[in-house]
Image (cartoon, rainbow, N blue to C red; front, side, top):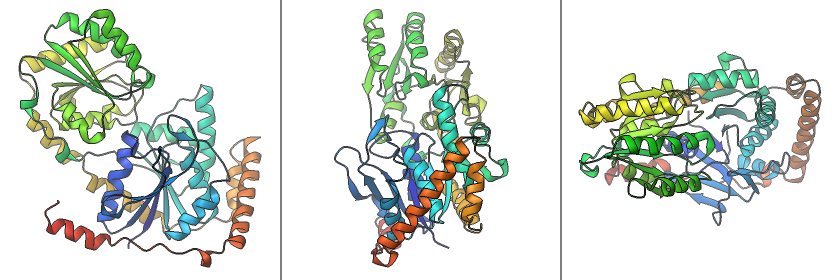
Length: 441
């Protein structure tokens, strides 16, 4: 049974990151499995309106106001008319939201449930419980997921975190990890300098990614190992601090900052290295370490979040998120590289068999089929669930849900479904057959 699926999130290309990559590759595999996929995100610069990507993947770039790190301004009700139009025009069966940080995702799921559309949610991050930002985000998440059909997390650690934050039944939460296109990350030892040991860092240069740790670690490693260099790819507010560190310790010829790179160019950075360093303070999965291992790099990473679930122990060296422990782990990794204890080709072959988007799409498809069998929740049951979200928040959520339902009825009257033109389907099957015949795969 083919389905019409709407992926919705603030985070998509041309922005770069794990969520963006996940949406794109999952959508492509679902299209290959015979489903129709459209993506709804906010506009990026002059990229506004409807765009088609390869294999007929359709993307709606909505003109929304951005408030912080590519997250759009919450509108509560103002998104509903255009989202309803898209759902009806594309004949959507399932709305699949991604990332708790995304207000567009939260609103999309909420409005879809008001329309009676099946909805699921994938959480890509870990959150705390004490600071003001986490408390607010967790309350909104609990509200949104009160009547969700199913939730997907990218690791078992992420599942436990999401279950606690949103007060979910663990049985309605599945663990489906990220994956990697192994053919895009083939080791190439000829690219690495045989006289040097190169440590690669590919990350957003922000506090959460442990950039303060990195800034303290680099000078110490360079002082201990004259033949060790660093390549750092990424952009963010901590880039200035990294530049200052280079100036202070005169490491211009040892530390290269290449800036933000497109995801298609990440492999060209990784194949130049021998060791991949991840200093994150929190991670639900970390697709970067999978890509690095697939490229044949030995991984050194902080033992945080879901990272210990990702790679076998002989492919990764763990450290606590503390400066001295990272130095110890890096020294061990440098010794292993010196004595040639790492075989890049074997790393690549193992990762290729462990993580594939074909498998991830198949497992996600099973989730879709399972939620299509669930019953539609009546309005009174929706209000009861919202009421249980808190003594004062529950009442507020009930009012929001009731107003949203009244807006839905008004839209049905002002813009009848029959007046909305149904979008023709992209001839995906014929297009895929043509690509295969031309040996594109």
